[in-house]
Image (cartoon, rainbow, N blue to C red; front, top):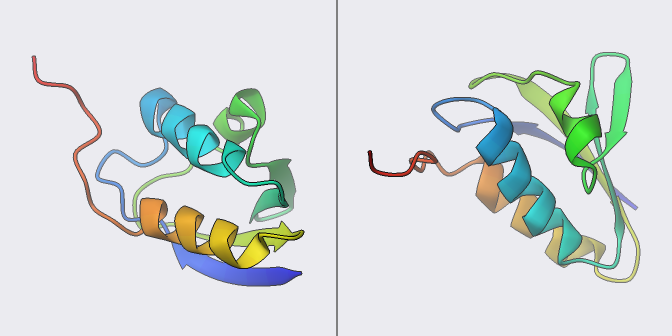
Length: 91
């Protein structure tokens, strides 16, 4: 099991689209992946669970990965949350 604090660096925080993208990233891995914020702990592969956290840019969360590909899973999640990419489509 790997447990790591990560600071969210997405300009709009974890709104609907970034949450959906995070769930897609997490779902690529076999490992169980959880996001902890305060007293809440949710499955990173659950859109509804992740939406309940209401996370903003600059907030620190703890990501927990447990399973055969936990190292790769942690790296993938961290890379997504730590890259200040634009998550909005061109209008």
